[in-house]
Amino acid sequence: MRILSAVVLVLLLGAAQVAEADTANAWGMAANSCVPTSGTTNSGILNTTSNYVGYVGADTGLIVVNCPVTNATDIGQVVGMTLLYTDSTTAASNVVEAALHRIDFNGGDTLLAYVDTDTSGCPLQSSPHGCFVSFPTITLTPDSYYYYVQVTLDRTSSAYIEAFYGVTLWRSIP
Image (cartoon, rainbow, N blue to C red; front, side):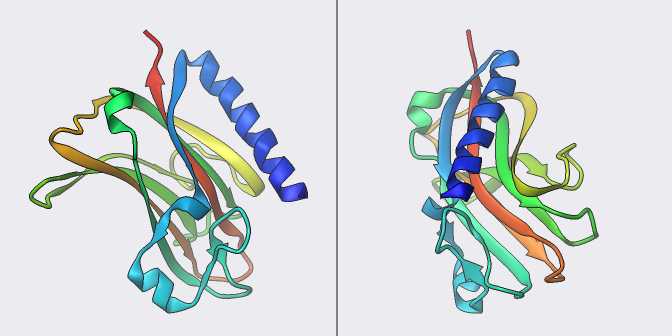
């Protein structure tokens, strides 16, 4: 319950920061609603028993989950992304990343926007924290593309905390 309260508080604080940037929530997804890739599921390191995606005990390795953007028709244009995460170190190869992708109907995949906890100005956090990153306006065209956010956690040592709680896309307020 304490973690859930902390997550709600962080979401509210993150929303207050974003409101100052003249944006509005366009889409969001909790981490445990995202779909782990088959490699992640088969590795046995994935922990989704709570309200986050993270590692089982002292396990290390790569965790990848895909979060489908389900209402692209209603969103229109996006101008930023918030990654709700825990990352206790900037040590090389220990990072939480989120990347907005589009897939054309023939299967071509294009990276549209990216945020990571080591190089995007996101502070180190040993508890859940939201990091908002703005980017040039991206127009979503769901009649031609599918969209998803891929979140990757990479941990090489059990001494570090890497966890993913959720992701939000933001649109500009006209």
